[in-house]
Length: 257
Length: 308
Image (tube, rainbow over all chains, first blue to last red; front, side):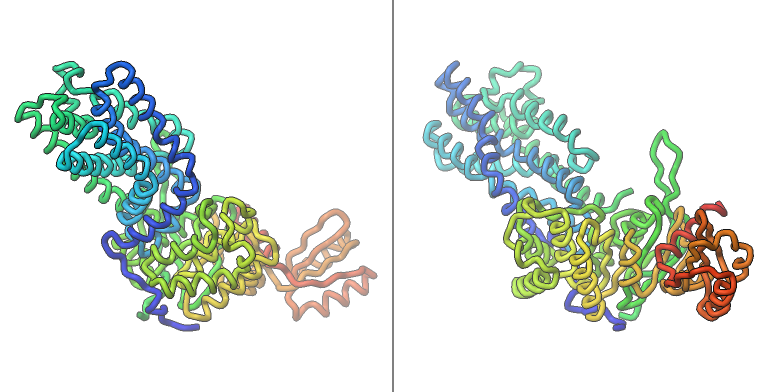
């Protein structure tokens, strides 16, 4: 019997270690669900169609909303996937009882899902640019805000996933949060249509905050100086806080209580 | 590094759930696993084996006590222990939409191994575990036993210094189990250390240098399988198909169990001649065989249950 462990098999845990490898893993796993990529666009397509029928002039708003909604609902996919592979496959135990970092596991999973689902979102984004006549700066703003909304949603999704003990419960509850906060507030329609007393609330919700900022850029919403700051800094601050919380939570929940 | 791969002292774990009485899963487990050893943790369902494994593998907090992996305090600094370990979780499954080859390779990459090392270890594990014929088929198309082989291959390919295997061969056919055993022996020969749980006592006997039996959260026996067999009064078992009526005459040789007309006696080898002479004198036919680990386990655990 030898007495020393083979040193070449010991890999220290590094912050965000394993992110790219798990991103690749998740991409390979998700890429097999090609039908899911198509069905991920159903709600957006239906809502775009409704807006077009009711008011064709707002198609640009609806397309921008569809991009943001798509980025937001990727959080639901993170929630579903994280809970499923933890409960059903024990992937947490396999991957996290080792040198891979917990935050790398979370971020790799979220990014892997994003990479696979980015194509239909990019298609919607392209349509928004062309149909909504978005300038380069507005297009870049759409890209950046969609990224923030995705990061917020992915972080929330991962945190929520840790509370589920049963896959059946996920089916019942997971879509609730993402659909309610992605559809009810003014994401697919202008902020001006939303009851005025509730507008600060809409400006504090990441998908509708991003939508309001973009609607303001294309002249479909009027934001006061305070409202712009509320939407922008609210979105940035909430995303940063939730992302940091997700990292903290990923590390904390490796071990059961 | 000279510290023991695994050392625990008076480890306790109580599950406290609101509204139900607390459950004491571990009631003071002390054990150590030496470098290069294969140690089996045995016990009935719910005895505390998986709880111990989950605490040792940094996946569960202990309530009290100490536990160290290569000298690193698992309770206080689990992140320091993690680089040394790999785990086959109980009822774990590979990703269904990956083939075994991708599963093993991407897992090794996620653990920080280089492309070249990951590739060579993946191929080695595939060949060693008999996965070659289905290494490129999606895991969803594989049988339960093949998936389990993929899980074990994934973890042994790490060649981690300390491996925790929770029922690693469950659902495997006897050939596949032996392939796993051979792989685990190879791994310890290369310097790894293994702690495994199993309900297959032939596996524990064939594979482990030492074993611990856990019952109701406590270690009730530890040692080699021969030690365990000796602890029940002998290493040989004599069966007398018509011997039940003569039970009293054979009591002095060791533990006797009557079942219908037949009698079974556990005896030390040095007293076998004497016992056989008595059987011949009584004109009883006798069959002699070794006491199996399973029989010893049933007696040791059964005795403990009776005491409790």
